[in-house]
Length: 91
Image (cartoon, rainbow, N blue to C red; front, side, top):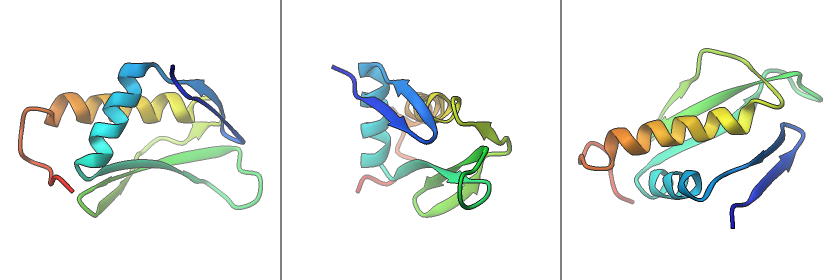
């Protein structure tokens, strides 16, 4: 059963395949996590995409109800891009 993400960034119920992609990415050195635009009670968030220690900030600020969905979209993107390649390190 998928886990439900509830926080100050809203709620998102990830599907099993999205969780599988997230776990695969983390196992292979790809981390994606939210960073608030401001401290306190931020109205917007940026996603940080870290691949083998190289960090990049996603260009668009996201509203609280968009963060988890976009994060899983990125996990799916990188999973599909790298699952059959050896461009990322296996930890």
